[in-house]
Structures are given as structure tokens and as C-alpha cells.
Image 1 (cartoon, rainbow, N blue to C red):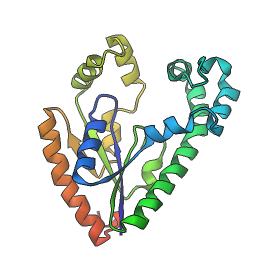
Image 2 (cartoon, rainbow, N blue to C red):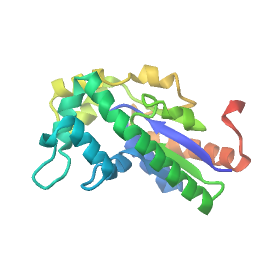
Image 3 (cartoon, rainbow, N blue to C red):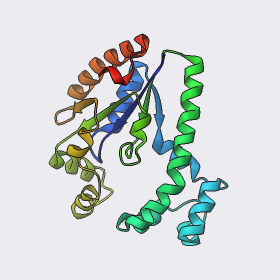
Length: 210
């Protein structure tokens, strides 16, 4: 039977990189962020629900969601963020289930990775057979994020403080991947874990055996 594995980590932890390594090795990837982006495309019901709550100002001239504008609205306001999550999370979960079921029909022993930044915060980790957390020191994460040139240091620090800490995420992990060194070090860990997860999938070992 297939194995459904949640992969998560904070900003700059290397979650996306780890996901790409799993994909290269043969794992099926369900990307929660890609699903989210599709859900808010013009004409989608979720976009209308969002504009009904947050106003037409979050729509740009092309009719697309202004993600930066929306992010500013919800970033420092937990109540607003909860409203947005209440719209998106159930829809994301449903899409993930549909993708997972479709994969299982193709490959009953598939290793399926759900790549999701808010896997634990949304409590979707409860639906996973296993949970992987990518862990990196905060200083290294800040450097990685700054190298992208999207935010300044104060903005990065503020966003990291607004996220669940790596220490807290690790409490929910079945496996922890260390990403404090170079890409090759992370890749080597992913290769070992991939082999172990494939074995679990082929043997149909439930989470309760851990």
C-alpha cells in the first residue's frame, strides 16, 4: 500500500530543495503551495470568497490576486489570517486527497510526499502516515532568505517570529533532516530516508508501529 508523507519546514529551511530531491529519486510530490495558487486563479470560487471578505483592492488590474497585498493584510492580524485559512485550507486538503487517490490508482505502492509549509499549523499532519521536518539554524535561514532579495533583514526576522519555530515543529516529526550544511549533505540524507520510506510503503507498515 502507498505511503503518504508530510514534508514541512519554516522559511529558508530548505523544504523546497528537499522536495526536489525526493522527486528526482522517484517520489510523487503534492505541492500545497501550487494547489493554493490554482485555487485563487481568476474564476475560481476561492478567489470570490477572498474578495468578499478582504475587498476588491486585493485584485490587480489583470484580475489576479495580489498576493503581496493580501499577505500584508493577514501577516500581523491573526483574525484576518484565520479567515483566509478557513477559506483555503479545506479546499487544499480536498485537492490533496484527490491527487493522492489518483496517484494510488496508478501506483498502489507509491511514496507520496505532501510538501506543505503549514502542514502542522493546519493540523493536516494528522492525515499523514509520516511527517518529515527540515531543520536549519535561524541565522542560516535568514541568510538564505536574504539572498533571494525579496525582503530586508527586519522583514525576514519579523516573518520568522510569526511562524511556528523549528523546535516546535520537530515535536511532530517522525524524521528530521538537518540542513545546516551544503546541498549535498541534505541530498545524502534524503537518499537514505527515501529508501527507508519506500520500504515502509512496500511493506504497508502503519504509523502506529513507530
